[in-house]
Length: 428
Ligand code: HAM
Image (cartoon, rainbow, N blue to C red):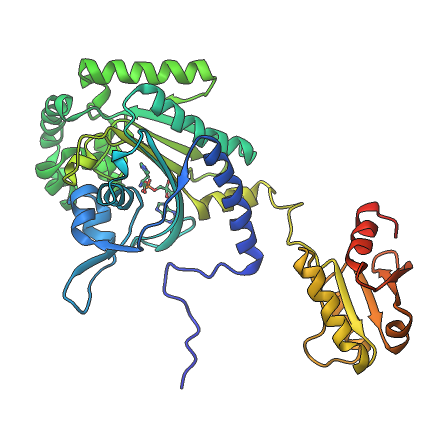
């Protein structure tokens, strides 16, 4: 039988040399989100396809081209989540979480699935860290989530990032805007791509998100939503900017941001890493006041954002973030010189591990020489050899593998405490 040796296109294995970086970053981010009052939520990896059609939007690239959709054996139409927001909104409505104290603040670490053309920073399976805040309508909430994303970037020492913000209004002000945008685009319809010709009929704002060169040229001079905001949306955006100014958070206003998902209203924003030639969006989000109603729930003004974790880790790697943050080294390797000592070795290792110390011993019936070679290979900080003599006297030699110095240590039941004292005092 042939070996199956390649992962599906657009997916990648996260090997130990990278996986620890994910854990490190995830833990750091979780801590920051917790300090803003966010609690973790987990939901299924697949949902009813209709959830994404209704929330992300029928006309979006995500729904039209990128979803992993399949029928299960019960003929249900299901989709691997392409993003988290719709899933969380569904979960809070189904479980009645919105009936508790609001705002409801939730975070998640999710794998997401989009059938996109794989390239640097773009995968078919990728991971997001996202937050969603349900039941918060004031501009302070918009500023707070932007502040949280900003704090994450600060704590991770990422500097070459710009924050772009925009307001894409509400259904009220959109009516006038859609008319102006449609008039403008209709005039240039012949030069739009086939997809955009359809979008023009169904949701002209989606044209603004097109990446094709001809469409991009046309979009450059298109009217922008900011010029059509109703009084309420205009006031809201003014307040968001004011609070960001007060917090000293720098931003650019980019009237062209529409985001690739249909549920957004009012504030939308993106954090762009721009150190390289090709700018990279590492975080995107905004307000989605109509989403819970769209899904059949009550009116719950809400908002959130998501970081792409692979992109974030790539940026951190580029900035040497992990330089001094390697795996934990093995603290001690205990070898046996003869079979009599084998049980004692294992019980000492067991005790060390039970107390949280990374300790190792041989699992392959190796010779003493080979055991010590292995201790060297895994960069053990200390090594110790037990044989008949050590078992009899209860004293062994603890060797610092770097300095090669040895120190006598009692291997009785207090061994663990004595070993910790030595590590902590740097005595040896
Ligand atoms: P999004 O902009 O589609 O928004 O994705 C958020 C982030 O996920 C992007 O900024 C990017 O860093 C990362 N990302 C997206 N697609 C890929 C991909 N194919 N490969 C690698 N990384 C990717 C959302 O998903 C919204 N649900 C965010 C949100 C939460 N809005 C409100 N709440």
